[in-house]
Length: 255
Ligand code: F6R
Image (cartoon, rainbow, N blue to C red; front, side, top):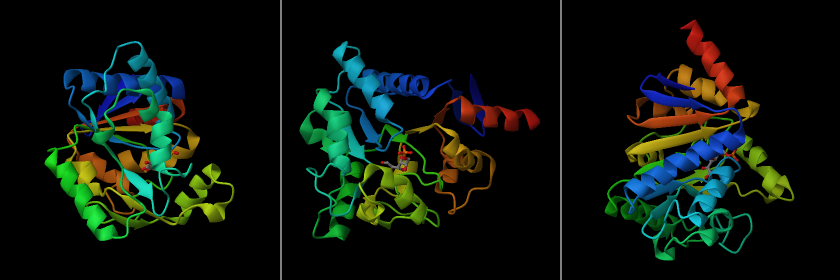
């Protein structure tokens, strides 16, 4: 089922697998229509299935990454690419090692930089030099964050160093041996970078995300719920599973 609400396309699929498949199809369509597409990529549990589908499509000659350029949303501070918890490691494992992307076209913030301010500025400049991100893939935090733009965000910020919210640290603790191992800081693209991208594709699945998606769609735009700013982006597609979809249908029926 597909809805249009406040100009946002909302696609509802039954399961996580169906959501992943649809997201991969939309990304593959973007890359096929423009082989030099600039993709903004996310990490976390949500896009794993999407990347799996994209790898499968690549192996079946449905999509070609040769000229694709990527910019990842974020990276933990002080974790190098060889560290299994870093997002650079994640991206190699879940996508880059399995497709024909040109390594020179991959961009991930350098969390081990000596000069953080310069690294952030250079990241913004690199994005700017490519024009705009054609399609930005996003997950959403239970607190409504996108990228690592936590509640009380400055909507106008570009790439910057962020202090992670307690909620984010406990949500991400599942990837670490101990919660005390979760980095407390990261470099993240800002809301400005996300809002400047031509298309946004946000995925959300599972009951834990119902509240954040509800606030993102149906409540006022506020820095306390960073994803709410997407209400005013002019090309947003949101794909959700049935558990979140039921909440959305219920809410729209009452309007
Ligand atoms: C990841 C990112 C985060 C995640 C969000 C949801 O690069 O920027 O905003 O998308 O924390 O994470 P999962 O998918 O693990 O629930």
